[in-house]
Amino acid sequence: MSTQQGPTPRRTLLGMPRVRGTASPVLADPAFDASRPPDPDLLDDCVHCGFCLTTCPTYQLWGEEMDSPRGRIDQIRSASEGAPLTAATVGHLDACLGCMACVTSCPSGVRYDLLLEQTRAQVERRVTRPPRDRALRALVFALFPHPRRLRLLRGPLRAAQRSGALGLLRRTGLVGRVSPELEVMQSLAPPLGPRVTVAPRTPAQGPRRAVVGMLTGCVQREFFGEVNAATVRVLAAEGCEVVAPETQGCCGALSVHTGREEEGRTFARRLVDTFEAAGVETVVVNSAGCGSTMKEYAHLLADDPDYAARARVFADRVRDLSEILVELGPQAPRHPVAATTEPLTLAYHDACHLRHAQGVVSAPRQLLGAIPGVDLVEIPDGEICCGSAGVYNILQPEPATELGDRKAASILRTGAGLVVTANPGCLMQISRALERAGHPLPFVHTAVVLDASIRGVPLPGLPSEPRREGAVR
Image 1 (spheres, rainbow, N blue to C red):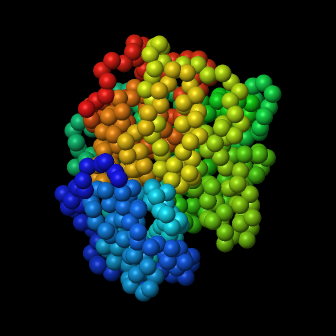
Image 2 (cartoon, helix red, strand yellow):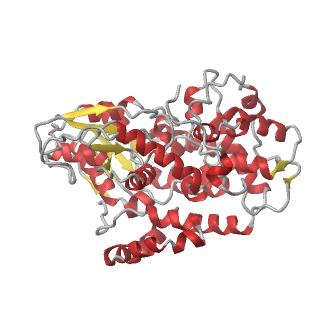
Image 3 (cartoon, rainbow, N blue to C red):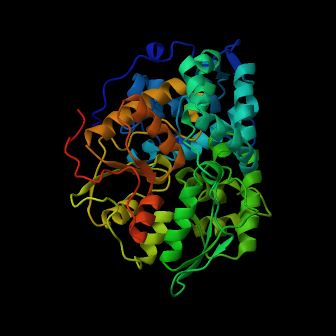
């Protein structure tokens, strides 16, 4: 049973209609077209047992049946049987984070992840959204899946941060009055230093144990380049030759998760081509959302005669960074990461697309727990999403903020001096929530901690003296 606080009434939380700006109650009739509609066999797997309710973030927030996995399955089934897609139905589907905690908790093995992916693709094809919604989504997808465009944004954004102009703009509240979604976009931006890149090929240190490709990502590449650099150093130290093709682009995760199916397929085909040409044995991913989608390429491209078989081979080669390191076993020695003789309390946050979508739970804990001087602690209600969920925190800022604040409160109860995760979206979302709570903490990617431990250098931001204040209550 979750220990989160009780449901927040939806009207109080959002203060606005479920689907902002919708004029007509009927958006699509019939609801679905003939292109990969929701699988009726998957719908029939749900027996309404209710095990999903305690781990569903939106049900935890609002306590509404239609905002639970089984409630959404009922709505999808109704649409499959001939009911039109209404504004209310689309609102309930849009409110889902796609965190897949329900997949982990379901004793019947319901593939809600596939049902949601199939349904959202139908919604994006069949539904005409309000102009404001369309404009926001067009902006998001014209920017985030395109590393070169993000690179052009880095310079002005970094200059605005360093000059104080961005902070001043935030304090005015002007952007929030114009658009809460744009305010979230500017608030999530991490502090930017010089751009960090990785070499197209990095040799293994010592005997070569594997040749691996590495996804450099989009937001990860341009805003968290130090994470990619740390990933390469860790892999090389563990005997991997690392190939990071310069021609690689987006993996398609953001597109697939929001129903932009054909766009996601296009990105997926290009990535398969790129890593086939690289000739690698394994493709390593350090972003949970990207990895979960890449492991599902076989499903995404199942109807493509030119790529179906190739996608299956590719998906079988994809590994999260923590998976490949555990499979190889440690070679490089580990050192403490804090300049103190006292144990460092480290809280590990499970990214939903690593824990629930990929089922990778023990590997990162095994790696972090092996660092000398680390006391690894669990975060209460760790299975509940932080509210990032790809671009959910931009498209649905109010519930995302509520979930982020709840996650920050859970982290602070651990008394941790360091927080670690495996996903850039989670890192940005929770860092902002900790700042709102008035207790910012050092928060880094798993690769950064492992890299510091292998190189024997303290992590920046950690105290040089033992932490004495204990947990924040």
